[in-house]
Image (cartoon, rainbow, N blue to C red; front, top):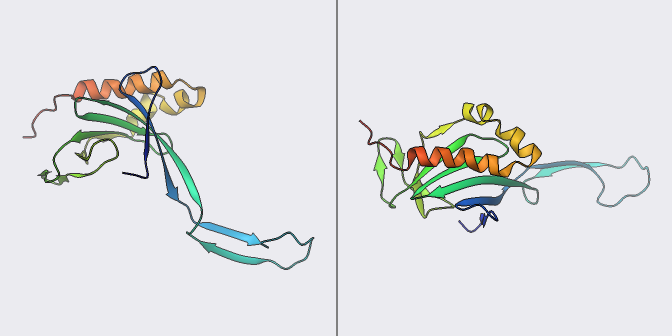
Length: 147
């Protein structure tokens, strides 16, 4: 995906910071130009030019990626697959690490809090964040077939 910059994290193998953006609705009051304290305001809104930057942390190894979006969570696993993969309600979709991946049911919001990822992020413990993601990948490198 062209809109996502996947940047290797310096000094940590298989670790990436991903930067992307989301459109954000703007809603403003005011003038285009400051004209003193005149009571001549206009309300307007739209989607055209507000962006919210997003940072995602990812650990990738052997066709498995664990990612955590620093704002929303959860920890999500993605498994590299072919374009035509479909199994149950899980199917291939374009992904920013792999050309195609699946992972609809492989996530946990609770793990974000249990692992204290927001606190790690807030103090700059990036190695701690990546170690958590690494644990998810290593546990799932050889996913068990679904019964």
